[in-house]
Length: 255
Image 1 (cartoon, rainbow, N blue to C red):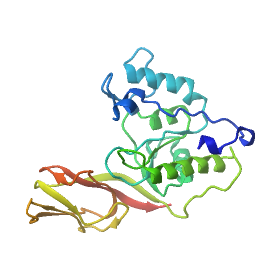
Image 2: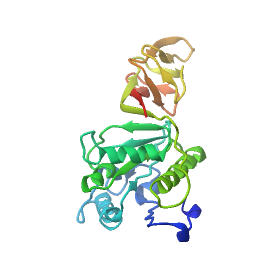
Image 3: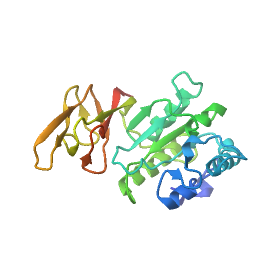
Image 4: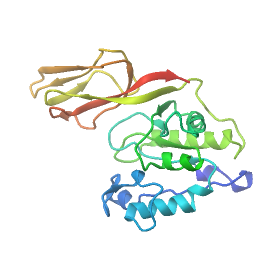
């Protein structure tokens, strides 16, 4: 994205920090191995805290506080999931409307509008008046070029919409909004045979997955408790009793 924006055509500034969780980045995990903390639970951070809290503090007080808008880019993890953007403040928060509009303008097509856990940047920055979103760009064990392209387009959409650069943003006419997740658990262990794909709209009681034994015999059919979007699923085909076979995003609204 930075290679596509020329300083002479930019109105305002872009503050870009490509890698924040440096220790976790090298360990290929979300948790910082120095203090076993998840960086996105440590904001606004502490100057005398653990490794993650100190990094969060430096980022928050030297970069974030200068911003008018904040985009906290994430990879969705290692489990396959849809590309989405998250609004992490409650609907009564003073910045909710601005955060939701930022998510809509990002234009990825799917929005999770749910207050997140304490310590998330997408909560801490709105608390000081800075609209912030948390895009989760796919699940992957390497370069997910499709998700990266969506993220690049999303940032460019924001720059265009808010007048940082010229051009018309590419925003879908309709976008799906979910307010929460429902995790689907297996009762029996075995192998998962999904009956739906990511992004599929499912109805209440629709079969989502079959659990089969090693000989291919069906032991269990897992159904949707209510209608929603099939949002994420496990990376591996095996599951133990009580293990997750996927998540639904519900309820569905369209904006």
